[in-house]
Amino acid sequence: MEGQSVEELLAKAERDEAEKLQRITVQKELELEFDLGNLLASDRNPPTGLRHAGPTQEAELRALARDNTQLLINQLWQLPTERVEEALVARLPEPSTRLPREKPVPRPRPLTRWQQFARLKGIRPKKKTNLVWDEVSGQWRRRWGYQRARDDTKEWLIEVPGNADPMEDQFAKRIQAKKERVAKNELNRLRNLARAHKMQLPSAAGMHPTGHQSKEELGRAMQVAKVSTASVGRFQERLPKEKAPRGSGKKRKFQPLFGDFAAERKSQLEMLRVMNSKKPQLDITRATNKQMREEDQEEAAKRRKMSQKGKRKGARQGPGGKRKGGPPSQGGKRKGGLGGKMNSGPPGLSGKRKGGQHQGGKRRK
Amino acid sequence: MRPLTEEETRVMFEKIAKYIGENLQLLVDRPDGTYCFRLHKDRVYYVSEKILKLAANISGDKLVSLGTCFGKFTKTHKFRLHITALDYLAPYAKYKVWIKPGAEQSFLYGNHVLKSGLGRITENTSQYQGVVVYSMADVPLSPLNLPRHIKEGEKLLLHHQEAN
Image (cartoon, rainbow over all chains, first blue to last red; front, side, top):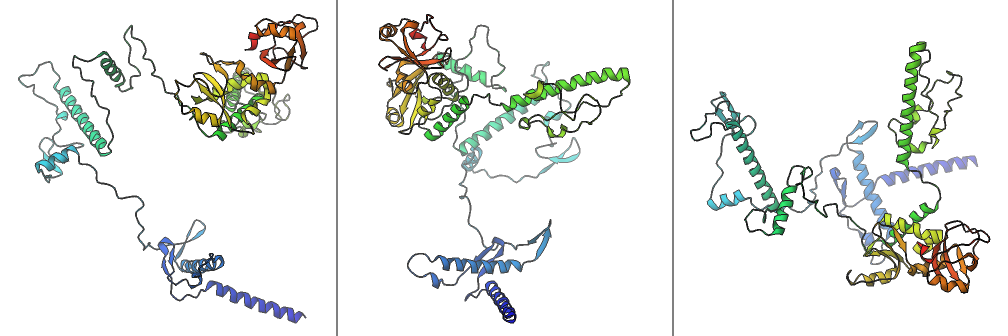
């Protein structure tokens, strides 16, 4: 009997081994094509088992999937491995299949104003050198940009031209001109961008003073001018008798008329539940603020007491006061955590206090 | 026409809860259909979803009313309950006061009701409680706030317009 059971066991073990081997090795007519970079295995064998016209053959599909996955995993195990932070990792080769585009092809952008003009006139971009010889500094400098060759704002000596006002600041004039050019360039760039995205720029259509504007147009121009400052009109002073503009607050947003009825009902029921619970709901922010304020006050009081006592008795007692008996942990939005201070007090320093229990009833709420 | 904001819903619920207490959830959550509160020109209407969908087709300035008007919000955003809400308040009322037939007529014309005009009153009605006034034939007349604690033999004044 025992012999039989031993034989049986051996036979079973052998059968298991064979089965395992059979599972790992899969026979296929055509070899699969592997793209390990994408973890892809392509099976070109004709699916004879699936040709039955009828309900899907679940078991056969599953078997097919299992076989193909087994082959893929076999291939993966043959890759060179390395160790990355306690994990054994296989290094995948470069993917060989080219994946299609994720997003559509970018459409051609409309030409900028200069490009249109250049095309019209047949102007080609002339090839220019990057660096230019600068006599003044005696070096090769950029043609444009940082520390460029001929920067007229950086000159230290400017001759006053014959027809100019002798009191005028020529340096400031040059800097101003530069700023205006930069602003104009920026405006044109934004306009080109708006044209490319077919967006509308805020236009100054009716705002130029003509002398024939109506009261509404003038009012509108005045409003726009008021808001066109760096702080968007926030610090503009009003004339002595000018009234504040009506309707300049934020527009309120309401729920849609046919919103989600179930959600509306749920929120109303929740509100009713809160109203009916007859308990004052814990407002966490207020509770924590109150807590923090009380703790600060106590610490300040203690410090004052310590400094007084220290002067008199020469700092006999160490800081015995950082004992905070645990407040309810739900108010815990404090930086540094309330838990850190809970049991830190030296236990037997002053005889009055017992075991960390905090005296004084103020803080309980 | 728009749904009520959180703030407005809370003010309104607090008012209505004075009269019907937690039975208010039966108004919000009804088994026989979806009913909701909508605000139109400062008035709150309690309307079923079906009627609401029909009413949405009428332009705002031509729409006079829809469903049942429960009350309105005043300019300072306080909620005033209207008599048209009585149909929904009466069945759920927690505290009721019945008045005798003689006093009933006088009450409906706006006069005070003396204590002798009271027929029945539910027990444990506290001071300043919101009650619904019924006639002896169990016809609801008006919602009301009690002015004072009921004591025996005391002249009690209940005024119809003290409802809100």
